[in-house]
Image (cartoon, rainbow, N blue to C red; front, side, top):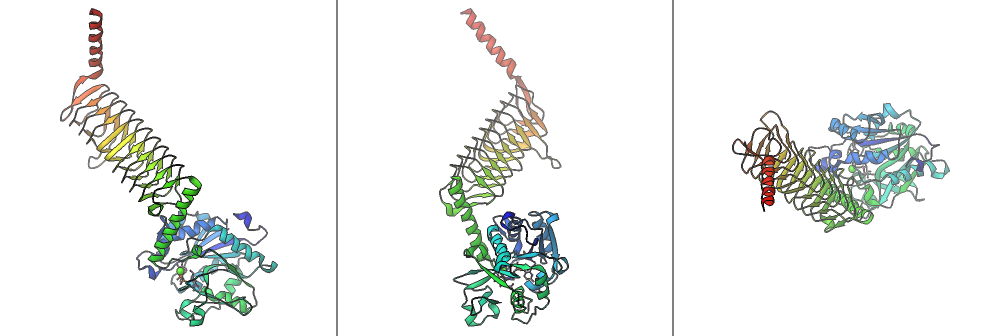
Length: 484
Ligand code: UD1
Ligand code: CA
């Protein structure tokens, strides 16, 4: 992105306004912490700003400032960020003023963004900055990103003079009926010559209907000082939609999700049976020819392979799914991994780094927590496997439970290859079950089971050695053969 903005220019800093409560959300949570696509609004803005490779991102915080700071630090590193406290929320002009000590003497360009305008794209911001530098061949002092809206209600209006040049911004609450008819609005996104911004900001008054210090007064003040103000009119209004209430939040969530789903269909070749009722995170990726049924949510950084079938009502969060996997209806899969050609569900729950190896199978009402289910192994019905490792080609019978919690500690269960765990077996961890062992139905296994042995009972006792038995059988039949 940085090559779009020519290098000879002043350094670029970004200031994100994120101190307001957002009264219209009617929420105990600061507005910028409300989420779209599972990430706080302010994080979307900061991530987009990062794409411009600015020198630093300043974030003005106030309401739940510590929480906002922690959220933002998930997105950008400490080295490239500075948090500025605005103690009282006296308006957007006052919010910018909070950063005065850091910025007023900087010979830089300042891109001001709103923490509640999350859909803005980096390409648009780059074009805005570029116009700011190129305006009339010498650059502008302030460049405002505007759009035209059929319904401009609520936004500040851009008033132009008779020559079509910028005159001033008038807030909705201060606008006359005449000005309210203006369709061109202020997106709340601007580029400034940093020094001149702070010089003009000192003259902003709060004698308006809201008694606030408006940042929107600065461009007119600069203009009256003879500075050049440029308007960058953008065509995609949705990008600059601000979120002020929950209806707008839901609208943008839907737009966001649709955008992701369209991209998955067009660029990745994913089939959606009902695209309107699927919820796919922008951060997720889904492979070719995978089919997604209605009401599926794929959240976070999930990766789904090619040729999978994901049936209705499945939620997959921060998980990895290989190729050719079938996930039947109503499964919940979080922080887990499913390898190629596995089958899951219906009604299965995988969590806490559960891992299914290739061609393994988990059936209905089975829960896997922090468990590895080996290649071609099966747990088909009504089972809980927690803190367990299961080898290859092992069958876990219906109703099996690893009793992993003794009231204090979580204990591990290790089950080998080719094991048959009989229905309704209780495996009291810590416990090892050797390769080729069998537990009879209803066993309560309290001690390690050696390889190739059959245990049964409550508590389970070793009944026989299966290998010795098998060898005996074999000898018998070969003797019989010889006698014939
Ligand atoms: C603002 C603009 C308006 C524009 C609209 C675009 C002003 C006065 N008005 O109005 O012209 O059309 O954005 O979305 O700037 N904030 C602070 N501290 C404060 C007040 C606000 O940090 O004291 C932050 C908020 O958290 C928010 C942003 O600034 O992220 C914008 O504030 P908001 O109150 O939503 O302004 P709008 O009424 O939407
Ligand atoms: Ca707003």
